Structure formats: C-alpha cells, structure tokens
Length: 635
Image (cartoon, rainbow, N blue to C red):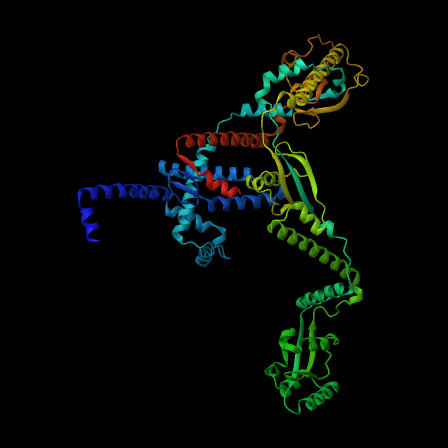
C-alpha cells in the first residue's frame, strides 16, 4: 500500500491518475446534465415543465367530456386526443409566461371581492361564509395562498384572451352582406350522370397506364395493412340462458332484502328475563288481549330500558336481535299494525311485540312476483355469463394464448379480415381505437392478442399478422389502380359532355324539364343537404357568364329565365336548371338578430387572431418535446 501511495505521488503516477479520473469526471457531469430532466416531463415550454401526469389528467377529463356527450368510446382516436390536449397545455404555458412578461396582474383585494361574490361560498342569507370557504380549501387540498395564485393566474389569462379576441373588427355592413349570402335561395332542378354508366365506352390503353405511372409513380404506394383475426362478444350473445327455481328464489331473497331495507316498520316490545319469564309473558299477553294498554304495561313490567318509553325500540332491524333476527322477522310478518304477538323466545329472553306503524305492510308473495323475478334471474344470469366470458378471454390473452386457441377453448367464433387497412378503413371494425390497437408497434412485433377493447355494442379482442407496410408499387402492382382511376376520369368526361349538351337544351327551352329527366328540388339555400359541394358551388355562383367561365359551361345564349349549367363531380357529372336568385331583405331579421350574428362573426375572427398570436408565441418560445416519454404514454 505504501508503494502504491508513493507511486501516485510521483509525476508518472499523477499523470495516470488524471487519465483515469478525467473520464469519470466527464461521465459525472454528463449524468448530472441528463439527470436534470424530470423523467416524467413530456414537454418543456421555456422554463415551464409539462409532466406526463398533467397530460394524462387532462386527457382523462377531456375523454370523459366526450363520453358524456354520447360519443362511443371506440370512436375516440387516442393519438388525436393526446395531440389536441398537449397543444392546449403548451398554449396555456406560453400564455402564462407571456402575461408575466407583460406584467399583467391582479390585486389580492380584487380576488377577495370575487371570492366574496362566489355563490359557492355564500350562506343561506347570501353572506360570505368562512366555514364554506375553509371546507372548499380542505376538499381541494390547498391553502388560501395557493387558491389566490390559481385565481390570479386564471384572471390574467382571461384578461389577455379578452384583449385579443374582443378587439376583432368586422363591420356591420360586411356582416349584412354575409347574412344576405346565406339567405339567398333559388329554385333548382337537378339531373346526375353517374360515371359508371359510361365506363363501357372507355378504353384505357397500356400506354396510358405507363404514362400515368411515369408521372405519378412517387405518389403511388401500397396501403398499410394487416391480416386481422378477432373475437367479438356482445351481451346479446349470452341472453338466451335457462334459469332454475333456485335462481328465481335467489332473486326473491334479494327482493326481500331490498324490501326490508326500504321498509319502515316501527316496533314496541316488552322484554322479560329470568326463570319465570315465559310465565310472565303469557300472563301479560292475556292482560293485553283483555284490553289493557301495551305501552303502560311495558313501563311497569318490561325488563328492558325501552320500557320507560312504552317499549318503543324504533325501526325493526334483524341486527337488533343477532342470530334470532330471522325468527323475529317471521313473527312480525304475520302481524298487522296494532296486533300483539305471542311470546317469542330469543337469546335475550321472552318478547311481546306490537307493530306501531308500517309504511309497506303488504309484501308481494313469491307467486305474485314470479314473472318479474324470472326475468330478473335471466338478466342476472346472462350478465354473469357475459362477465365470466370477459374474464376468461382476458386471462387466456394474458397467459399468451393465440386468438384461435382462445376461440377453440371457449367455443367462440374467431373472425378474420384479410388486408385490414390502416387508412380509409371501411370494414366491420373501422373504429379508431381498434385500428390503433391493430397497428400498434409492439403488437405487430409480438403478434399477441390485445387486451379487451370496449365498443358501443360489445367487446373485441384483436390479433394482427402479416403486416404489410407502405411501399412504392411497381407498374404491375399499380396497373389495376391506375386503370380504375383513368377509367373514372374518362367516363366522367363523357358524362360531363352529355351534361353540357342537356344544359344547352335547357338554355334554349326550359318548358319541359321533367321530360328532360330533371328532378325538382324546390327552393334551396346554401345550407341545403340536397346538393353536393360541386353542385352547391355552381348553383350559387353569381351570373351566367361567371358560372360558365368558372365551370367550363357551354357558352350558349340563354333565351329564358331558367339557366342550364353543368359541372363535373366526384360521382360523374351533374346538370342543373336554376331559376333566378331570390334575395331576402336583411332588415327583416331585426336589429337584435343582426347584432347576434355580428357578435358570433366577430368572435370567430377574434379566435383566429388568438391562433395567430399563439403562433407568434410559438415562434418565440423554445419548446422541447420528449418523444420517448410521449410514445410511452401512447402505448
């Protein structure tokens, strides 16, 4: 050891020591630098950290809001939800830092005044209650300073928001023009030409396909797919169950328990103890039957403290009599209000009972309730069978069983969808939550059965195989797709040519529209669902010349009040006969309605300004996303 110490003190030893310690020092600094990042942090906005717990809590609240609105849980796209919630958290973080930079603030006196006006803290007389305020703080696990800080932050954020949104300018004249456009209407007749009716007249040559492929080959890719196997169960699958007499009797017992729980049956008793208790009980029963008052006898003869109150012991409960509760209940079930029981022996002695009041004196018999009890037994047994199936499938899935093995073991049908697409999914399982699960990265690698996925009508488990990623298509692979595309294009052009010819006939003579095959739609507005987007755009374009120039309309002279126009659509082509535009006087709306529309328009403009402001802040804030942490949340 001394030799080693002497060596390290020498110059060669010092050099070696430096060489050994330098990497350790660097590693220590690197560890410190990386260790300074909170492992739960998903985004850093300036000096503000957004953690995974914040993101998950906000997602949970937003998801519940969506579900409360009646949306099926299977239609919620978790990736989209996370993206939207994360954006709102980043926006708020930027705004919080901006209000601090701008020096916006609010005094404690203002916050105090607002709290004193908060109805949650007002007593019955409308006065501020310190007790209610303290109860609120305790329920929220915060102190006064924390609440003030929260209020202050929200108030200044609202100030900034109002300062941007409420300054939007949109003149009333422009509002009136907008209203006028929305209120325009015209009578329309319509005929559609489907491209499929012309496809037999189309010839697509190999040279056409090759030319198209050369021009568009960078955009022609395969669709990402998997072969999907799945099990789906619904409550209806287990509805056809057989019930036994024991099942029905079990429902009657539950009914009795609920009946007793809701029953208010007040009792008085005379309790007698000792060796002569039975004899005394019999004597008292005879005296009561002879007309003596039960309450008076209880005061003088009962060995129980309740005797002082005339024997009153309150509402009947089996628990009052321990193991003898059922025995006492059976005796009481045979009594009417005011009727005195025969002596009843329990572990406490001998009792005489009288029912003083009963809010439900006549419990239905088993036979009376039999149809209802039988249905309840079926519902209960079906639910238990459904729940058992859920548990069994989840357990087998967790144990690593494949979906076909699960189906065989539980005698459940396994369904298959070949080439299940990630995009433009029109299959029986097109819900976003199913698509996300089917293409989950870990599931594709492991090819395991998913956990249960709840849908509106049941539960599904999926297993993906034969994953086909997106990749460029060869000419041979792309040929059917290109042929279909070119066929539709050329067929639509033929359909448009016929539509233009019919439009020209309408412009020459519109007296026989029905015989021309046009259907009368009546008066339509811009909000009509009867027209597709192409038809609607054409129908409300101003002036014949403008329409013709915009849509390639055959430029023929119009000789009547009805205008014939044609346009290509996604389904082929359409021709419309348009009556003159009807203008509605905006003044008919009234001042109040006009102002309401103006306020709505200005609010929309203000929201656009707020988004522009947020984009400005985004350019001037350092925002760091921790992709690994975000991906862990997704999975």
